[in-house]
Length: 158
DNA sequence: GGCGGAAGAT
DNA sequence: ATCTTCCGCC
Image 1 (cartoon, rainbow, N blue to C red):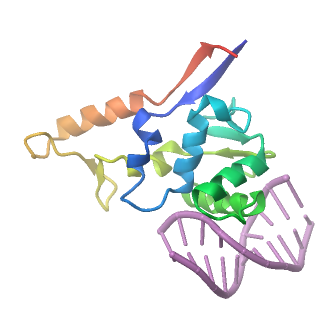
Image 2 (image 1 turned 30 degrees about the horizontal axis):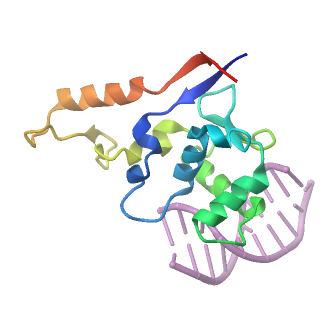
């Protein structure tokens, strides 16, 4: 059976890419679950638009989130409220989704958290080359590499 | 189930 | 700022 999944760059899944030493952020936690095979019955990428995912077991996702944040009273009602805040923030014009489905906007949500990319207030990214000097060419090369790993890939499996 | 205002926590 | 909690409304 063929299905597709969304490839986000590896670094996006890593805990270290969560900004600073702050607490785990919701988008990052969701991405973590999405990445792991063992949670595919709980949450999974959805076919459709890029970044779309379905929560198959709302209670379980809420339980895991609550455990991670040490909030034993967490439930899907509260989790979904947080998700609504999160996704509204990245795309206020987002349509009301289907049941249990949400959509990440990778560029707006995850890209600003790329650990090596600095974003100026004007939105222009920059990366320092190894000699500690700014190079637009280097910046563009790294950005392109990051974007290339963002693609939909077909593969076989169960 | 899903939405979003309002207030509270960190 | 990023949720958490609570809740009325559809």
